[in-house]
Length: 247
Image 1 (tube, helix red, strand yellow):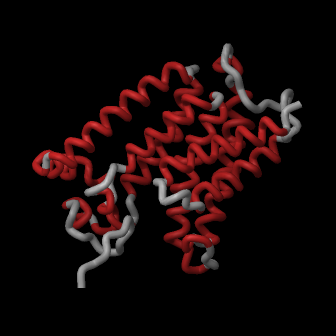
Image 2 (cartoon, helix red, strand yellow):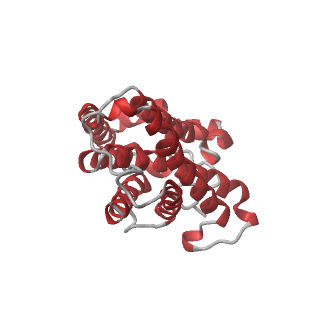
């Protein structure tokens, strides 16, 4: 009986050579993919700390998005190109993405939309929630999910709880530590939340961030890739909440 193609099938399907060679490290636990995911959050914090503005980052994101889309189109049209592409970058892909758009396309699209629409601090938080909450939920869900109850979309309490705590920590890291320690980097840029302009306390903001991070990771919106839905959904909800409680 042929095995069904799923994003996280237990055994390699033979579509990506590196998945067969490193069945657990790459295929089952997706270590390289998770490391890349997590590193984006730290990279973004580094850019923020060094005063890089959204207006500087957004064109780069658009450039990367256009090029990654072009590479995927070439991959779909030319099998020989696809073969070499998968050999080179397959360790960062899931086998379900071999004949579909690469996850990085949705990742870049989500970040680009957020950068174009939302303030700097909301954009940064949405990246942290995507980068860290999704990874935390996946890692803890796989490791401990069998020990806790399951609910919507077969999500585990372990994974969702990890996403919540990570979301709380991400917001505190940004608003409680990074932003106060680097006031000069926001000169000329609007921040959606500050203690002086919002009725939301830092504790409430961090708690809300945890709820949003956990919910965005768990909810399936019309079957869209969560690399797109998590940052966009997070940014929308956080922006609305901050606006509602503005002084």
